[in-house]
Image (tube, rainbow over all chains, first blue to last red; front, side, top):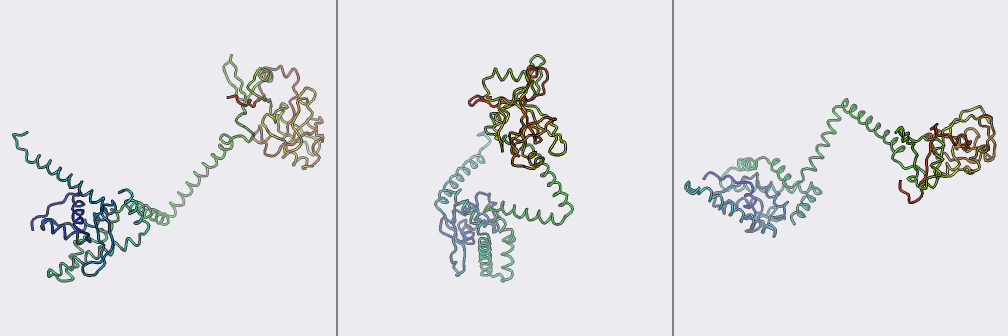
Length: 113
Length: 305
């Protein structure tokens, strides 16, 4: 596997919100989904997932409730709230703007200065 | 919106601690088991799978700790933990605890004592009706430029009394020691010689009898006395027929006209037990030099100090 990209702190929150926006998931499922939609290029540290989940729930971006998993066991499912949806949008916009700016800076050729 | 959800989350976390704890446990355990199962599906041995799962999780306790932190419950719990730790440490070091407690007790005790004293003397309002209307007179010598607090001479006082219009009552008094004889062993009683309106200006009413009249404050008159409740009880056994009775002060007969209740304490910090009218002679009235009288007055309503 390629060397994992190191995640910046705020981006994990954004990725979790995105993963959950595609449908409610339990913690492990969120992990798998992120891995899946990143085409296996991104693997989240298991230890940092749950603190992030609790933080997001504390802030009101996601909501949780207990349900049944695929193998009939009790698991806590998370879903995106309306506020969370808006948050995801603004964060994504910010991210895109930031990457544009940084790409522009990095792409500056010597003559352009 | 998010503030409210934050509060709600914090509340539920604090109030239903055991439930949220077990929930957290269950959630993390589910995750680990699911991960281990996936590993096993991929061909790893069960024991190895569990070990790897646990390792990946970085120690379940730490994960839980981080989760708790993320919920913002930490501060209160940390406080409680610190308090418990402090108590445990105190119990372990009894010598230190004793010294600390004694020091605190001493400090607090001294502080309380001083405050009660200051409170009674300076902060609490005087127990007279409309006490803020009472003013103490001060002698101010313009020529010499000094001010003597609370002492004045009779002539100055009388002049002031005649000339001023801001005070509805002005009274003059001086501390005095009386020799009481008869009715028991000779005793030196501290009290005051006062102008007739002394009690009235203060607004203090006698417990028995009456206060002085203007006639009694004339030279030659003034052989009347007012006792304190304490003196009445101690020397005259609280006899009911005290009003009108004669007592012997400085070898002369004085008729008792009133008794002040024990709550009346003026001026000498509770040592005043006997009052007679000043009954100043004309010569005394003209005296401007000796300033050993004190005076006070009650402002007219509406006058500002």
